[in-house]
Length: 180
Image 1 (cartoon, one colour):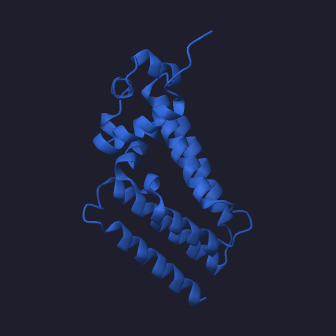
Image 2 (image 1 turned 180 degrees about the vertical axis):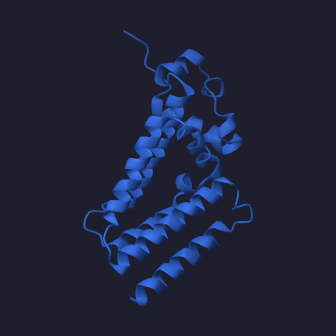
Image 3 (image 1 turned 60 degrees about the horizontal axis):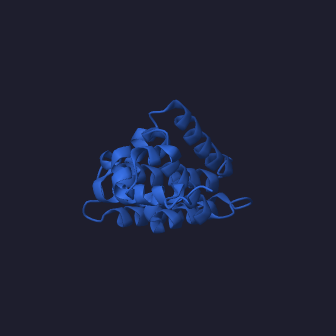
């Protein structure tokens, strides 16, 4: 009978998130994760064969968490979907943490990961499809929020400005909907 593992894949991902929070994306290595988890490098590689696999698993975890926060989106009007999206971006630490978002840079260097990211965004834009003024305003608001997310990676939130910019996007979006 084999020994029960004390460190799970999910446990390693939690420790990896802690490393990224503390040291940024550059601090996340297989060796650093093994040290932080108190296991051998081979123990980490049992769950994640490479750093790319580890980064991919973190991105998948965050995407899944974000999608869970969004909840059911089928049948939502574009404006309601974007309101929900803005609310989740405002409240989701995983989505808004610049150090974690920095992992996206490494993640999108893999062509397969780019394909998966494009598919996720395509599904969002399909939900916001149509030529109505509401759908157009919803797409522009989503693009603005995603632009803020990318700017956050570059450090725009050093002075806590993220929330104010998000307020601006939400305010303009709601004004656009009222003028239609």
